[in-house]
Image (tube, rainbow, N blue to C red; front, side, top):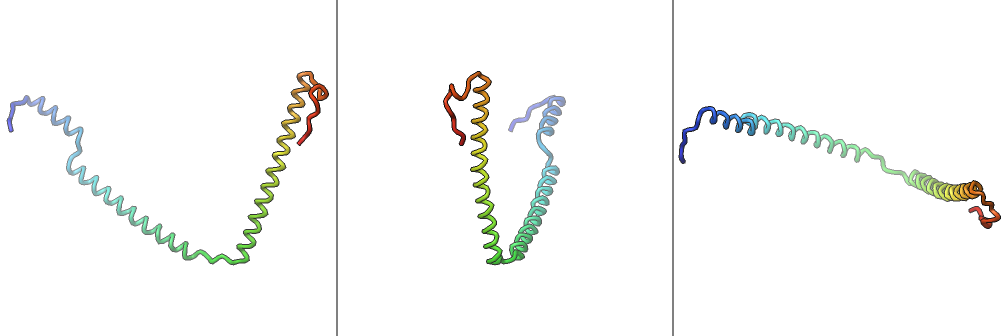
Length: 121
């Protein structure tokens, strides 16, 4: 290893640059302690949440057959009504399109006789 004579100002500037780029060992140790404390806190919270999940799973009541059948009937009825509503709404929207097309034709000066009759859905 070779030693050189370096002016004090340059040495101080280099040390200041290194110090600004790197943290001290004590700061690094404190960061590690803080991270370890965070990990331990999160571990305790996870254990608490896992025990809460297990408690809730065990506290869940067993479903009754009648309730299941009643719920199933309600679900099926809601599904049927939703499908009927969707079909009816589709018909309404198709009729609305036809009405607006007729209005546009009338505004353009054409009549239904010139275009040919259009049927409603």
